[in-house]
Image (cartoon, rainbow, N blue to C red; front, side, top):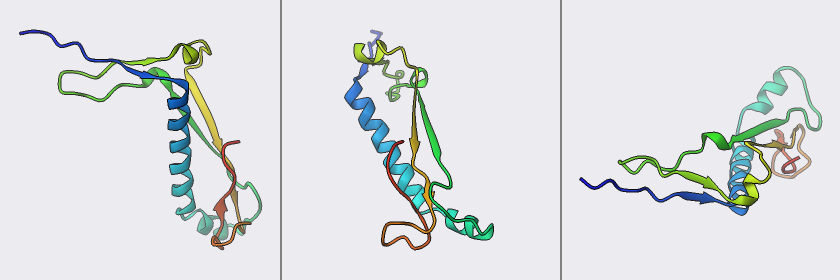
Length: 114
């Protein structure tokens, strides 16, 4: 039986930034559709940037997709390796109640990455 070598998945800086952006966008959508407004109402709380959310990507834990014969190895481009960062952190802007943007009378997440 011949052993098969799995092709490496190489992640460059642009791909990592796109991944981070996609995760932040999804988190914003989840938080905008959450019941946070009801929780703040329960405690009679309102204001700008009431709550901030932090997201961390641990690059040391990345694995490629399982192909049935193993996971594709994940490698990072030299520009990522040179930074010696293993944890990439980002912050979502705060929850605002009432929301300054039309269409979210119960509150919303505003801004982007802090």
